Length: 119
Image 1 (cartoon, one colour):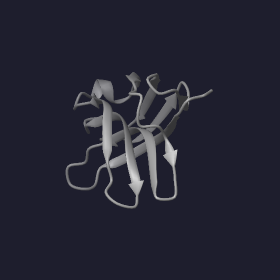
Image 2 (cartoon, helix red, strand yellow):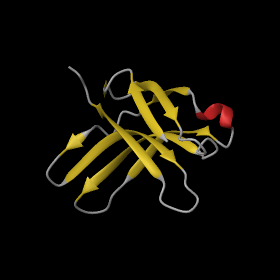
Image 3 (spheres, helix red, strand yellow):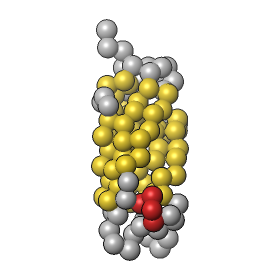
């Protein structure tokens, strides 16, 4: 399966909305695999990691008719956290498409976007 995420904008103000579409193209025989969409932030760097999910949707749940389609989404974002790229910690925002695989690691497709004030 391949997944293409198109965002209306890759820069979003805090408290705004991220919106776009996910285009799914499953390989033959993959039409019944579960596919999920999430909008989330995560930290990385020194110390513990953290994550927050603001939207989670199941795009394909075993219905082959939904497997090859465009799925539109919109997610309201909180005021915090903002995107940050520091030396000790990084905070990034993602649209994540996950294909669930029963006997192996899930396939994950991440599309990054920035949350910050524009003025």
